[in-house]
Amino acid sequence: MEIVARPWPALWSLVIGFFMILIDTTIVSVANPSIMEGLNADINSVIWVTSAYLLAYAVPLLITGRLGDRFGPKRLYLSGLVVFTAASLWCGLSGDVNTLILARVFQGFGAALMTPQTMAVITRIFPPDRRGAAMSIWGATAGLATLVGPILGGVLVDGLGWEWIFFINLPVGVIGFFLALRYVPALSTHPHKFDIPGVLLSAVGLFLLVFGIQEGETYDWGTITGPITVWGLIISGIAVLVVFVVWQKMNKGEPLLPLSLFKDRNFSLANIGITTVGFTVTAFTLPLIFYFQLVRGLTPTESALMMVPMALISGGLAPVVGRIIDRVNPKFITASGLLLMSVALAWNALLMHPDTPILLFLLPSAVLGFANAGIWAPLGTTATRNLPPRLAGAGAGVYNTTRQIGAVLGSAAIAVLIQARLAAELPAVPGGSGEAGPTSFAGALPESLHEGFSTAMAQSILLPAAVILIGAAVALFFAKPQPLQGWGTPGVLPATSAGAEGAGARSR
Image (cartoon, rainbow, N blue to C red; front, side, top):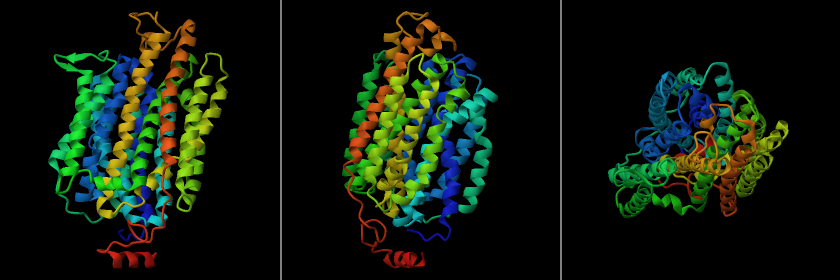
């Protein structure tokens, strides 16, 4: 680990940018109806406003994590922040949905440059026995951003228009840039050889897989154009990713994805867990927001305020969790949090009827707050606890890649399921052909369709509720963390830096 006299200002400086890029993962969900109306777009196009961002965010993460190791996390973070902030301005100025989708691609790429660096810096400047407290801030930021996004989005959409969910990033980006420039240390770099075949295989495989899943419903899981089919893309993506893994194993030089990372049981399991979290957090907001706005007639602000208990409880408990996860086995906290999230979503599904008293939805919202507090920091700490410094960027890249893949798949899967359930529950919607969607109603859902629409949304939200249960089961298999005296292997200091590490430990 690298001795940094004041690691906390560096962490808080990075948290500002990290919070901003994660808010843009969820802030669009509450603005979807307004964007549909303002840009005269259909639901599939508007869902791509989120999915394009998530796709451009997920695909480069393995690469940008390694770039941070090679050129320094501070340099990559600042470059990504500039790209992200400029793309935010472009998003707000977009005059049609295709331009907005393209701008969101650049936004996602900027986010991909930034995210692994935040986790890598924490791993490198905080000793393992204090990393839990630091990771609790990182985790609380991730959890709160997913909850605050819809709330902030609702206020901005109602007060100023959907464009301002992007314009708000401009002052935040400028402030975050200068704070990071001042407080984030320029950490040492490690001479990596770039695995060009690995870069190409990972990028192509991820793109084909996610694009195929996202566009499946649009093309009725058939032909896209010429010989290209949805299932052809998905199968090709899986095949390319298999080739990528085989190449990483065969590569005797320096692979893009060091498979040795997965020898650590907790790192492997934490990656599975965070994938289910990314899927669930991205997926559950869409049916819930559509229900609040189209069935219950809530404004964007009112529908977002239904999530206030989540944000308050999660934010209040995150520091408490951070203080205890370095002292106890995090698997019990993590599994409980994941289980509570599933319970809260199932509770929402049971309540989703046209005549349910609206304040009752605050109860599962509160349960989601407890759930979030027990998920993000324990998972992040479990994943990074034994990462060696030269692989900090690679490990952070893998962890964030799996989270983002989960988010992209969640966005794609919930879109497919919503369309399917609406077609089943509302077969006679005007515009017909058995196809139904919120865009069919131009923001006003006839009362006669409220029950069917509510049922479709309730059925849809059960998917993320089921997926997060997989994460809860996985967390039960975390190995008990061993006390760490140095970096990496429990009780062992790295031979190349034992003296410096010992001095660092004594200076603390």
